[in-house]
Image 1 (cartoon, rainbow, N blue to C red):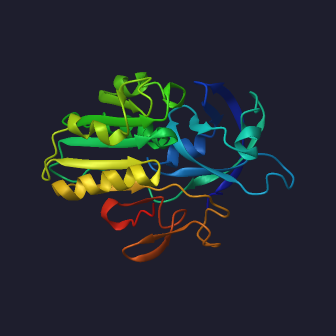
Image 2 (image 1 turned 90 degrees about the horizontal axis):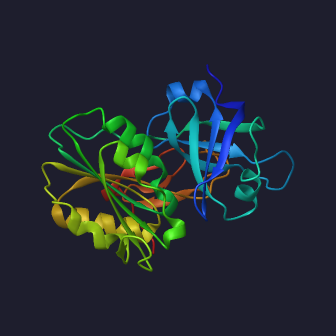
Amino acid sequence: MPKLQNIYRVVSNEKLCPRFYRLCFDAPSIVRKVQPGQFVHIRARDGLEPFFRRPFSVCRAQKYVEIFYEVVGPGTGVLSLKKKGDPLDVLGPVGRPFDMPPPGIKQVVMIAGGIGVAPFLILSDVLKKKKKLELVLLYGGRTKGHVFNMKEFRSNGCAAHVATDDGSVGTRGRVDKLFAKINPDPKTTFIYTCGPNPMMAAAQKFARQHGIRGQAACEEVMACALGACLGCSIRTTKGFRTVCYDGPVFDLDEVIFDS
């Protein structure tokens, strides 16, 4: 049985914008196995502080594994100091991945908020190979400093639309202001969403109004990432489920988004 936990080497760790970083590490075994929507669980450093690993959606897996993160606490603070060649203790890939769009789907809409855009780059890498799909990204951030560059998405053939709370980039307002950019058809449209719960709740409401199917990649603080501790449990229509083991991907209509 292949090992889930291994030590890999950092290839690069760059600051993309005032808030976000991209870290690449050399992990051929993960590149071969990972699927869009799965994540890796990284130990920031040895010792007791920070004690728990941190989960990160895989942003891309081509030559190297890439993660996209924001510095929000001691764990990601330590991660931002990693240099080329540094060892990285990684558990993964883990979690339920995205399902591919069902037969008959022509328009795939990815709705993301902030750091929640991470799993959609690897998803667009896969979906761009399906020539008949129209790919749309609706992306919201707080300010210009919280917005990921759309160049790579557009290179994958995505029509990318951005909204910021303060209007510093794109449309002023929340990401739901961008819903008018798509033509919802219950027979040919499929939604993927990842980001803050209020944003995903808005995507769920929109999907229900138009009878559209979809999936949500949920984000929670995790300890074990293997479904043992139950610390990342969320409410769903099927009862409490763990984000790390039962998810992080769930059917969009299944999740009960607490505000």
